[in-house]
Structure formats: structure tokens, C-alpha cells
Amino acid sequence: MRKSLALLLLSVLAFAAKPAPKPKAPPLTPDQRSAQSMLKSLSLHDRVAQLVIGVAYADPVSSKSREFQKYVHWVRDLHVGGLIINNTVHNGQIRLAEAYAMAVFLNRMQKMAKIPLLVGGDFERGASMRVNDSVKFPFNMAYGAANDVDASRFEGLQTAREARALGVQWVFAPVADVNSNPANPIINMRAYGEDPELVSRHVAAFIDGAHSDPNNMVLVTAKHFPGHGDSGEDSHKGLALLDKDREHMDSIELKPFQTAIAHGVDSIMTAHMSVPAIEPDDIPATVSPKILTGLLRDELQFRNLIVTDAMDMRGLTDEFKGGEASVRALLAGADVLLMPPNPEAAIKAVVAAVESGRISRQRIDESALRVLTAKVHVGLSNKKKLVDIEALGDILEAPDAAESAERVAERAITLVKDEKRLVPLAAPKEACVLIAVKRRNTANGQRLAQEFQRRAPTVRLITADGSLPESALETATGDTGTCSAVVVAALTDISDGGAPLAGALGPFVDKLTNGPAPVVFVSVGSNPYLLAQFPKVAAYMATFSLTPLSEAAAVKALFGEIPITGHLPVSIPGFATLGDGIQVQVTARNR
Image (cartoon, rainbow, N blue to C red; front, side, top):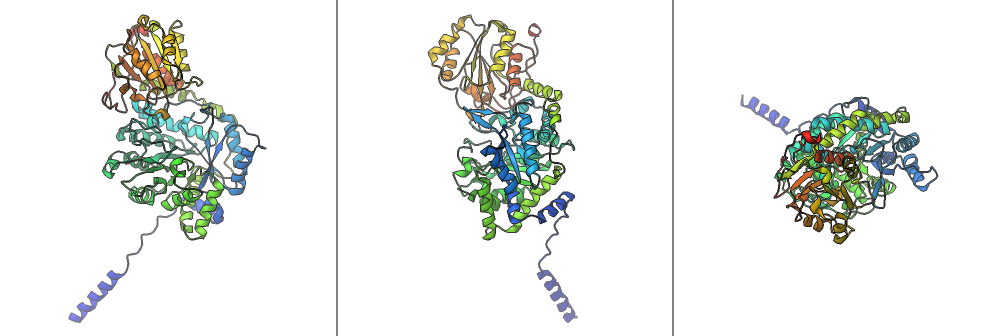
């Protein structure tokens, strides 16, 4: 009996000593099976090239130009995985592409591609962020102020339709950052707000909307992981810093990304920022295995595409030279290298790293399979990769899209302060208007001036930038004692962050608050925090968006033509809290 028990015990121990069998990998999906068959036919060079997205400026260019031939080389010779559409800059101003020219250009590139190109675009405000012929949706923070998730869902749907009509299948939106730093110089009104729950609701709605039309499938991207909203630096200019502990990150920065993953987001874009709570080495998240693999893949269980932010940004290029950043990003867990400064050099560096054993072939195959699966998922094939140019106008100029954009712009208007109940203006035709802009050679402020003058042709209105001395501003404004109110409309863009108004504008506005007429301050654009700089203004209103529709909505609110129903999606430290907003109904006298 004892001998039998001993034998039984030995057999049990022997069984227990065997290593547990590895769990079986889940079966491949139909998309993955199609992608795998494509992958088998590719050389190492072509597998690596599929991970590279080059930047193309889709302005009309001659096929004989050096620029066009560069794109031909990338597509026909290097076999890059795709392109991202960007805009050129002239005299400090972004020049939007012409929609038809972009679509024609992309069709030409697709015809040359051995494997269909995956084309991406930063369509955070629909296609209007890159082309000039589409509906100009408000910035995300306006959606947060309006708190209209249905509108965010519709924007996602319309963005998908616009993208596919142009030949774009990868939408680099929505922004999932929580803008909790008023001085943030790069996110600001690109975010939905500072409340992670509010941001999460709108991120989810945009993703759901973008995925809702099976005839216009796109890849959707949550960015910038693990969260760029509490940074005071612009990663285009240097390495940004998220100096928060892990508990804070779990409760703020990571929540919208977790929501995005739960709603099936197709890709997550990395941030070029240092995150010491997770990565003690002072390196960008884009090249950190602890952040991309440890946090995003292992902890958050994200299984789709990880794409870097633009690799030509100084937040990365200041740290790594040549193709080293590309190698490090793939080693960290990224799948797609977006906008490397030199795509050919990036491909060569990664191929060399594989051949030397620094990167395994399996690692390359994992990412290449994800890229090819994504192409199959959105319906890209050699038989279906071109767009119908003739159908473009009907989609880009859809009436329901224009109506939705206008409705959000109006519902976003938020009245933060109004001590004397000045809004709507009792005598708008007797008001004086100062439109403060960054540069006078831009379209910013023109719609606001037109709308005000259409309603009050004789109103005293000037447009000024920071180049004017205070004496010139005083001369142009004249005696404000005859003004029923002085309306100061300050138009600021994202790069201004929490900076004061340029030049003499700030001191001059401050002087106006001590004058005989009450000052109604309207923040049009990225700096809803300006109230902290001008605490003596009698009334303060914000649009949270720098678009013509937002300018028009501000004038409508001042004239009492629309109700004011917005609520602050951010706090203004020392002056207003999250959710504040004075509600004003349409007034009979101003209808």
C-alpha cells in the first residue's frame, strides 16, 4: 500500500513539474488571413517599408517636379506603406489644399503602388483641417462646451465620409488628451476639455460615428498616448514632459484611451514626451518599451496599430539622429513610423537592424501583419483603391454637415462673467468693437467684422495686431465715452497657449477696462483662459473655436439672436470652475 502511494505521489510530482502548455493564439480573422497571404510574398525590405508613412504635400504639383518625383520614388521604388497628407506654410500661414487636386494626386499615387497605400490625414475638424472645400467643423473644445455627444458622433461619421471621398482611409482623430494645463501650447482647444469623463464621452462618440457607415470604413486614431494635455511644452519644438504620478495618470490621462480601446479604436498615436512615472529614463514615450509594450500592450491590452507621432518633430529628432529613432520606436512596440525625416534612411536602418539581429524578423512580421490587416479591413485592394472624383462635391458640401457645424458653434458659446447683464448688448449699434488678431494678413476676424457690420453698418470697428503701438491703438479707437460698450474680440490660435495678447494689445485692453464704457471681452479661439489676464472686464464670453462659424456665432450671441447655453469645459484658475456658464435666452428686442 505504501509503495503504491509513493508511486502515485511521484507521478503527480512529475506531472506538476512539466511546464504548463502555452495558451493557444486566437484563430486568425478573415482579414488577418488575407493579410497573411499578402505578407508571405513580401521581401524583408517590403515588409519594413509597409511600416513607413511618408508625408506628402498635396498641392497641385507638376509630374516633372522634383517634389512629385520624390513621391513616385517612395511609392513605386521603396513600396512605402502609405502617405499622410499635410499642408504647406507660406508667410507663417497654413495653405490648405484644394480638394479635387488632393483626390487626383492620391489616385495617381495609388495607381503606382504595388500594394495599395494606406493614406492618413489629421482630420481633427473633419477634412477642413487639410482642404479648403469642406465644412469647417468647430474645434473639439467647442463640442465639450456644447456637451453634445450626438454632434461628436455625427462629426465622426461625416469625417469618415469626407476622408474616403478624398482617398484617405486613416483618420488621425480624435484627440484623447485631457487639457488640464491652461498654458498648454499644443493641445488646448484640440481637446474636448479638462474633465476625463467628458473627454471620454466625446472620444467614444466620435469613434462610434466614424465606424457607423460600412460603405465608408476608416481607421480611427486616439492621440497622443499616454496623454499630452498636462504638458507646458510643444513637442514639435522639444521633448515635452508629463510630470505626474501613476495614480494621477490612471484617473486623468489614461481614462479616455481606455474608453477608446473599449470602443474599438483602430490605432493609438504616441506622444514625444517624457513620462518619468512609467519610464525613468528621460526618453520620449515613442521609443519607450515600458510605455508602448508594458503599459499600452500588456496592461491596457491594446491589440491594434500603434503609430508614432510625426517623427520629424524635435521632441524626437533632438534625442535621436538618422534612422535610430525608427529602430528604437519599433523595438519599443510601435507598428507604424509616421513621417520619418527620410523614409528611405528609416527603411535601411530598420532592415540593417534586422539583419544584425537587433530586431527580430518576428517583430517586423507582427507589425507588417497589423498594417496589411488594416488595409484589408478598410477595403483596400488593387481593384478598389481609387476614388470617384465626380462624387467629391456632394460629400464635402453636405447640407446636414454644415447645419451640424453651425449648431455646435452656437451651442458652444459660453458666458462666463456678466456683472452688469450686458449680454446681449442693449444697444449694439452704439457699441465700439476692437478685433485683436495675431496677424492682420489672415482671414481671422474677417467673418466677425462682416457679421457685426452687416447688423450695424455705422458701428465703430477696428482690427489690430500686436505690431501697433499703444498710441496708434488709442487714436484708432477714439473716445470710448460715446460707446454703449466696448467689445474686445481676441482671436488666438493654439500656439498661443496661455500667452498674453501680443505687443501693446494687452496693456491697451487693460486700460480700456478703466475707461468710461464697460468692456465685453470675447475670447474667439484657443485661449478661454484670458479672463485671468483681464479680471476687470465687465463681461466675458468664449467660443472655444477659431472658425468662421464660431466668429458668426459670437456676433449672434451679442445681438441676442441665439440663446447662450454653453458651459466651461475647462476651469479658469482663480476665476471660474469647470461647468460654469450663465444661461441667456433669446431677447425679444433683438430677435
